[in-house]
Amino acid sequence: MTAHKNAIGELRSGTPATIIRPMPQGPGSSRKMMIGMPRRVQSPVRSPVSKVGGEPVGLPAARWPTCRQCGRAMDFLFQLDLREPQHLSRGYRMAYAFMCRGYTDELNGIQCQTWVSEKGANRIELVERPDAIVAACPPAARCWPEFELQFFEADRRPKARPIPLLRIRKAAMKRTRGDEPIVASISDKQYARANPPPEMVRLGGTPNWVQDDETPSCPRCGGPMRFVAQVGAMVEKQPFERAVESVSLPFGSEGEAYIFLCERECAPNSTYFMWQTT
Image (cartoon, rainbow, N blue to C red; front, top):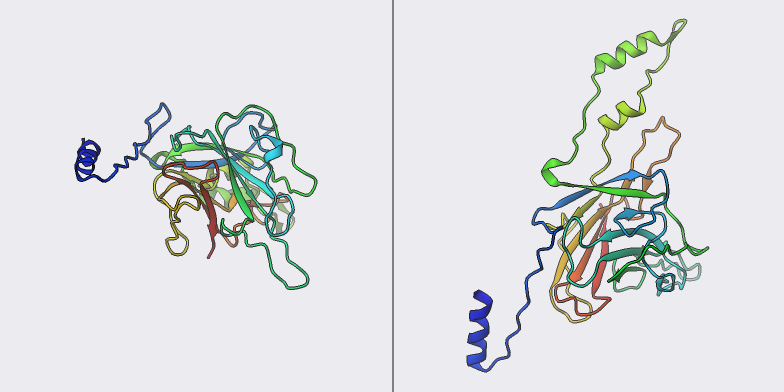
């Protein structure tokens, strides 16, 4: 009703009316922010779903971007479904995030500026109708370990369950060799319960800025942009005593990446990808 009244008033005054229609509320839409937690996969993902690492599924190989500063193929970071579990786009189903590794020019020391979108060292590719074709990682690009994303409403995400200290002490007492106690080992199941996956992805809601609010305007039309997702650097954190290395994306020290889409979706590349760090 409000948009209708505004349009009538503008028509009476002779000014063209511009009405931005609200986002359609599809089956997967929700006004609540969704939290995505990564889980390492046992076999490669071969369908266009939200995930981290591996190879992009549903993006034509010809659209693999190169850095505008150094000319090298960018690394594929993650892909997000823009319809499930949140309805975040009218015209696009998938978003694919790429970023240059940040090469340094030996002559003048200039590094590819990956933290802002306008420098051409990162890119979001949007696809309307993704298929199940896998885009092979170019030889010059890096492939990250692959993780699927499980989404929960913010107030229903898994919480950490601390392991009682008494249980660890009892286990240590049972594991002794002469006068030398052996450090108590914690099973993978116990460790997983005490250390759930990081809250890596936020879909919808409002961004939680590491530094100042840097909400951008659309680089194509100059209009307002819609916040789509926030992605943290930490994918999988392993304790020091484990042989498995932790996995984190290159967003600085515990950084966060932010993805925006033009409110009008004025063009296929009307996106903005940036990251901040402490």
